[in-house]
Length: 177
Image 1 (cartoon, rainbow, N blue to C red):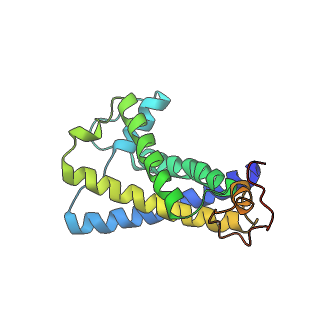
Image 2: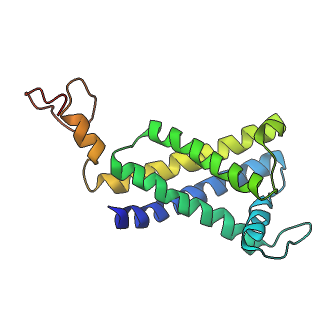
Image 3: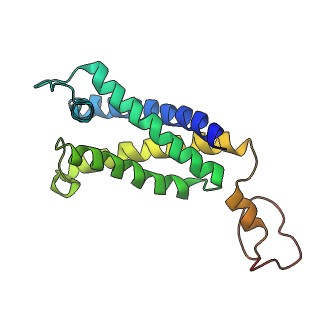
């Protein structure tokens, strides 16, 4: 499961980051919001690279932007393989994505806590990370589903009263085993 989750997660996270980036570019065309160079500044600090004042180098920015998204896709793929699938699982993953950004940005001193942000900026960030999480989740779920139900889904299938979407619940009561 781990090898599949790794490969499929990198794919899911990469697809999620591409869709998120396309959405960001569309939003920026409408709102005239400039590109963010926070990802590059975070990576420079994490890697101990000399910081570039002003505009950050695009390759460093893209490396952090897409690299972080692809790596986090692995976690969403592990969720899918374990049986945590669908929109609710992706909503939970949205929180993970937002939290990971905040940990990296705040720990490196590049960012500030979200409660201090202008509300419009916060809403835009949450929107884009939600798009990423839903897209990554849909891809991870589809790839994991090729292997059948996950352990959690199989467990739910034998518990009376569970809604699994996996198949019929056995007649015998196996609750508690």
